[in-house]
Image 1: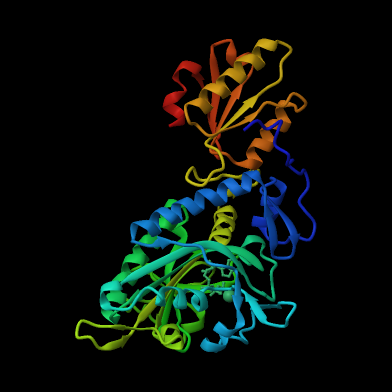
Image 2 (image 1 turned 120 degrees about the vertical axis):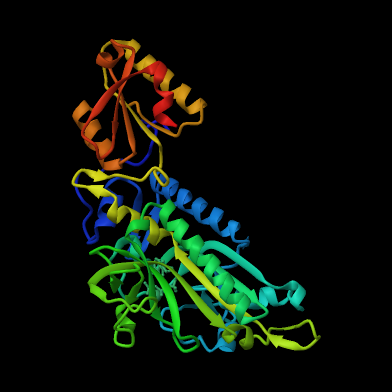
Length: 413
Ligand code: ATP
Ligand code: MG
């Protein structure tokens, strides 16, 4: 993409009314724009990141047999009366002109159970896992943490249906591993802990994936030995590590980036969902749900991938692989060579943001390039062209090296 065509601009000053680092930097860099508290637009650079994250999650959910669907965001209130969740505090309510009541989906159990119920009648139809990547609405009281806590946000939610508790438990472990892969691939794996949390009324535990950050709203205690953590909310019940009995470390601030939850038969029972087992007997269906906030995950990666000059995006989620920076010159040939290189790299499938702007100085361009945080900066100028080269520098590193244009390929793979 040619930066001269990019309609967003980098802001010199941090936005007002924004407290969290992730939103401050993301807004300055033109990745997102706040419409109101907890509600953001994704601009070209930000949407590219969200899509990269989405694709990683999609690949891992497909790998564990998840079937992708897309459910509505507008839900009939009747379904919530069936599950007893019509009064939960973060539901947005709305109604039709004729008075019938609806809510905006904050989760999708009330939609997915009747949906799968239509197709699952016997043990032969199970197990099933369906997932979607979709906008959720929650009437959050506090929405001051940028992408961490949206009132409208993007979530991947998967729901699995099983004939037996044993089958559910096996699948739960499989999804847990897929989640670990997702956080490794988005490069927060080393900061993210599998965490025991309270399970609500229908199961003893749920499990969260908590990423350590001082900006987080949760507190966890990490086991010194096995790296499992315990959420503050169950710490009294579990003063020791629930897996190895080891001592728990000091309290640390964290943000929940994902959550896996045994639902047992709570929601399937609410809709009278039963299937015939091998003996022809009607039996209940065991469920699990598995969520990841995509926008929160983007905020989490943003929160921990930066220095004083701006972002240092990991390759896997970066909006572009290469930031090609042209330094203006009176020699028209320099721009022509820069254009040629941009066209060539793009034709080869390299994702390039090309700073082709004439009006900006080298200093301004470097500062903006640091703020945008693309992993590899490639400067092309009159000086580098004297040796048919470009200057390559990895974002976050000090050293730059001159590389012959004919040899660039090795560096951009
Ligand atoms: P929290 O305790 O942080 O409010 P939650 O327990 O309400 O999270 P779930 O209902 O399990 O979260 O939602 C699944 C995932 O969706 C969470 O792990 C988180 O990544 C994300 N998520 C939840 N609420 C928000 C929000 N308001 N904004 C952005 N992401 C969210
Ligand atoms: Mg919540």
